[in-house]
Image (cartoon, rainbow, N blue to C red; front, side, top):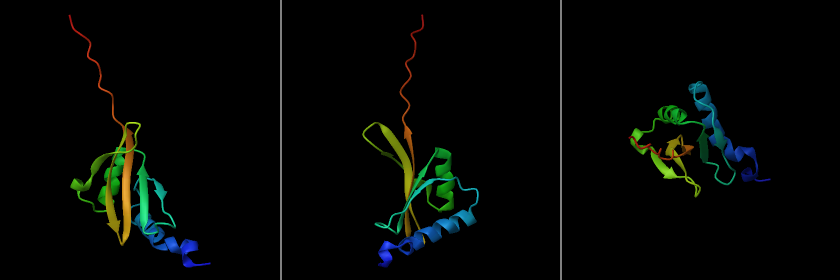
Length: 108
């Protein structure tokens, strides 16, 4: 079995995540994705926009790096940023739906 077939292949990403958890114990939880295919990348999907700001501050990412982007063809969008911590590439984002414009009632 090669190193690429073991959890050791992802050790660097897991170590950085563990260090963030210890250093920032109040950092909002997230859906985290790390893969043996891309062991030096971590996807961080958050549950709400406020969590994005907490992660941005913890990873020391400049506010101007946050961008809105189309997430899928169903009209959902994501707000997020890329980052790098100790050689691990992070993609941190939150998915949301744009609010539909409200119709204003005619006044008499």
